[in-house]
Image (cartoon, rainbow, N blue to C red):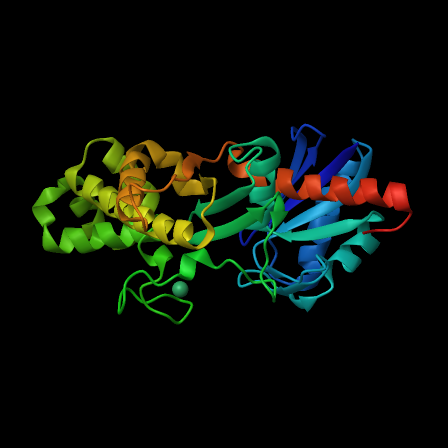
Length: 323
Ligand SMILES: [Zn+2]
């Protein structure tokens, strides 16, 4: 049975046909339109394009936003047009197939649990480090959502009292210190204090400080730039501190580190593990979570939500109605 997973992000809509082994067989993509109707139209067209080439049993949407716990309504998505929108119903009418929704980090965690780095783990957490931090928690392979469907907001755990301001309205959130954005902020701060430490980044920042992106800092660290390496060491330290908090609350068996920044894991992950092992409560007297990088890369959201769509389609076929 084939299903389609659609990753609905702030910049692009990416759809993929996924088989029962989690392999992506075919893809279609479009830029994310700003209006509600246009967005649903773009998703409908991507699915129709794939359905013209494959026999599809169901569709899942991985959404960067809050999804109601019935997996049919998008409550709020900061970078998308939907507000309290019955998205599953609307897309289902467009494509003539059952549709299920899931938060993108939850979808990625489900994929890593079924096919990737968290395979077989009873308690697994996903920390997706990109522009910010996306978090997910699986208990016995099931998504933990909390009482109102918004848990776990790992990126906004306060690590630094009176620290860097966060768009969420608080200060000192984890993702202000451990993300692609944070790498850039830290590098620019370090440049102001030690301009001589990185002639390369200093020259680039002089042209336009926005040129010092997280990706650029990671590249410079890889090339041996001392200031970029300091920024990377700073990220590793905060990653370790945050992971210790996550472990104190959930005591996971595995923590999967995903997101765009995880592509640079060789530059920070060993240091982060060391820091985590040193600062977790009861350090030295408790088993530690395995901290692994994600295996499914950019496709994790598509694979996870397509797998969810397969489970729904299979249960509909058995019981004659959706779960
Ligand atoms: Zn925050």
